Image (cartoon, rainbow, N blue to C red; front, side, top):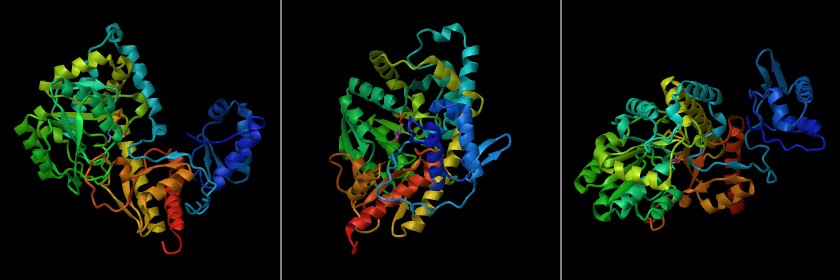
Length: 464
Ligand SMILES: Cc1ncc(COP(=O)(O)O)c(C=O)c1O
């Protein structure tokens, strides 16, 4: 649990008490939050365990905390302050709400450590030698089953390549495309600037293609003069729409007719909240699609594991680029992930994260409806981010500035636009990533988003 307590090193116990009291009072530590065990907090802060226990006991005495027999110390259910009500201009939030970031503090530590222990105990000695460029057969087999079952991906273990996340897959595939004579790659008009940079660094020219409410306007590919395309079909990043069924089939037809490669970024395909999950695009054109996925959202970016399903025609070129860059994925994490998937823990992690993110999305929608009735939340009920269309008259740049003053990092749609993307008539819109804050700071994070927009409105003056 991430408490963000600023302690005075000369009077740690007293300042711990003050900081906890303030955090409970102003709602940063929400009612129903479980505090870290005294032993853990004492260790983290360099205090004696008794001192922490005494601080907890005093706050229990004041009615702020509650000691539950056998289950630790919790923040008591006292009424929550109205989010945003206590936010003044001197509050610093120190929160990153950019699109795409997951809550790394929710990482399933115990299940992961069991999987590591089990795989270390059971793996044959050969597992720890130099491994295959494509990754261990155990993980490739587990992933092939998982992806077929959950995303409808058509792949055997030989089609899989394990990487250090989607980012490394993209970089490797881009270099493989360049090495096999491809020069231009279509990208969605809005997306991660870093992905476009990865493509350019590999020697490919990113060519922006416009988006509408059905996703990428696939017809444009006919005249774009491109050999490949990078798309987010399940949940366009960041505009939040799925690629429509007619567009999917047109994309498959285009790839077949032109011998082109589609790189499918399925970064959050498992996180659809409305029960209408659609499968991956890959099954429509497996010979022409590199399907990419990542463990960054369901587990944590810090694991650094992702995967690609690579068509046979590109496989050697991709493995050659892995060899040239010296990119080997560590065997222990791969074996652990295979065991983790095999034990059903990955499914559990996905389900747990889906429930948490869905609850966050609902709370965000409710608070925005209550406090900013002239703003609008858009984007599929899925994933870890949404769009917030600003109330009339408020500019993205103004909100970004106010947010920065509050210590809040998030951007407007403009910050995701590709250079040279044709100007589209979109209302000023913020991209709100609701994944990253730890659970106990989530309401606070949304209050901060609302405060940044209210501050931008105030800066407009009385007519704004
Ligand atoms: C659109 C998109 N693609 C892919 C990724 C995953 O990247 P990685 O596996 O490198 O963490 C992210 C994570 O932020 C993302 O937002």
